[in-house]
Image (cartoon, rainbow, N blue to C red; front, side):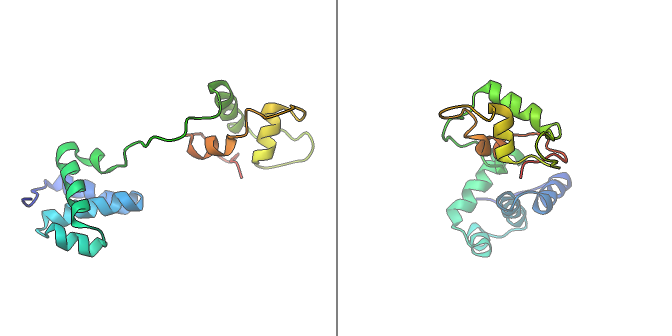
Length: 148
């Protein structure tokens, strides 16, 4: 694979990624920077303790897709267990401070959120059993009323 030729803007963007992106993405940005400096895929793989085929994969993705190619692609997985209405109600509830019915609380807890959404006496399996999954992957405006 030939040496990359990067513009000063591309170098700046990649260096910024090495400082601000999650670890895997930062390593991928380093792969591109080091390749542009003339290192071989074998040398880069040794520095990052990964196989040179992995280095080649990320270099090829950067060449075809640019910076977005260094990000993880969405993965398949278990479908959401919460229906859309419950997700919307949870997001709306998390944007507000929790009610102080039984005790004062500065933040939401999962049991409190379940009770708030389902009611305390819902029999059988509640539709909010997957709240932990939802609250960890949803892009919610937690602010100072975060779930703990």
